[in-house]
Image (cartoon, rainbow, N blue to C red; front, top):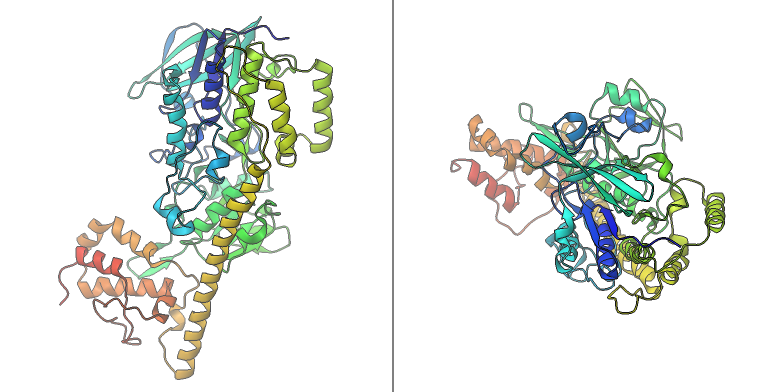
Length: 584
């Protein structure tokens, strides 16, 4: 049985660390509990960092598994060193989160939350518009605030050492020696020191180091076309995928995009990017995750392709079915993450070392609930109130799982055996010690998994189906209008401006909205600028001209071929009034 630990270190301040810290404190068995977080705020992977410029610093290093390496540390402590690119770069250290502007949770809040910490019933305007008042999704900032509030309400926020990176964790005898580096905002120095603990809880999550599959020619393609290869971790908004308006010739260049992957991050990005990119957006995947199936990828503006087989230096990209595409602007890999613990020397992964625990590393769903069950089990073990199986039984379990699952992502997937996993941890943890306020784990409830399938999956599938039907109707109306114009001899939709895309009109005018100063400096006349907007709108959204609106038009379109069609859009009219002098 493990010796009782009195000093425990926790790495991270996200959801896994929040519940781990709470479980340790409530066990009332430890003299020292310290939490180290490299960001300046609690929330972990739910912290949105829009101020950083996200990118893959070296795709070749990722492909060769040489990224996120340990850094050189001082010879003595405490110590101060100058800040440097190799140590302080948020890109080289992969310290950015994979959170984008539109991210919402993907589990019902009643299932996603911890047993005693409900997630607030707060809905974003976007969620209300898409899913209604009973929507099961919560905005990223709601989740981040909920994580921070767990520390605050539990009185454990003061245990966190913010802006502090654990650069090395070494086991010497019965103690863990942590080498720590503090990065004070505004300072040009790094401050280094060491602390000693009896046990180490790693709750850093596994969404730091992007995984990009090794595909022939990919590294060379990235080097020849810099910036064209991206990972969903660095997806912040659709702005970089948006078509660009060439003012001199009044033409929009839409970007051709491939999104690689079949999981949540892939279809989340897909349905944001399809609104602004060239149609069809190409979705490259072997198969989707079973829970959602092909519904997320079935859309008139999405072309489904098999996995990519090869990248060529001339810009051509081949797929496994023998087809290919050219002149692609961006390939976005939404292919998940690798596990990375650069602070741990390899030899510490010993099945006999019970003072090293990992929380939040499994996958398959019910994520936060899993964190809680793991956290309570770890707290009981480190307090010497629970006992692990003997070494040969743990080895037998590991070998059996390797034989059935392999040593890749499926090894960590518990979706097929939720009840066995949860109940195993609950039995291991047992009840709180007499006189303590330790957390009690309830029995596994099959309704948790059912809620995910019946609430989240159903809501997503309904919305995707609604979007698909809407796009199909837009295409049908447009084709009917084209046919009617052709039969009547009208040239309203001329060959040189036939649109290949149906992009929301707001996306076109967003460029005007962000660049008002530029437009004013150009001293466009009212008629000239309105003509430019009209031309761009017709190229991108010809279906708008197939509808009649009740909103009064500011003035009639100036195209000689369609004098009876107006741009009935309040947003554009308001923007034009702000930008331009009164129309003459």
